[in-house]
Image 1 (cartoon, rainbow, N blue to C red):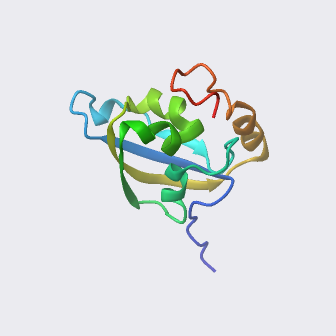
Image 2: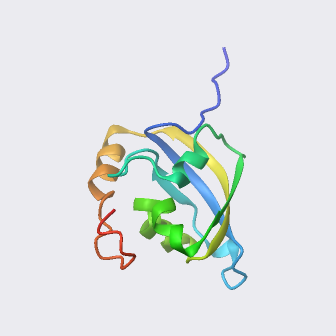
Length: 127
């Protein structure tokens, strides 16, 4: 019986390509964004909710106003900013590249680093 394609759900290792409306950042120069879904210290973010149930090849578009960036992206703001150059306001298109079950050690590592946003300057107080 053929293996069912994976979809994004709790504790999945997700790889995304992120494209922004910012022409100053070349899409080709960006590294894929990889994270473990659902391990944030404040629960699942609106960004993650938009990805839930999606599979490889699916696309999601998000228009995020500056006042909602921290709330929408949550604990993923700093790691997402590094490969994508995303800054508020932002319009992003996300393409799911890969979805696999995360290994236990990857989940533990993601949980341990998930709340490390206390010095980002976004006013979230560490999410």
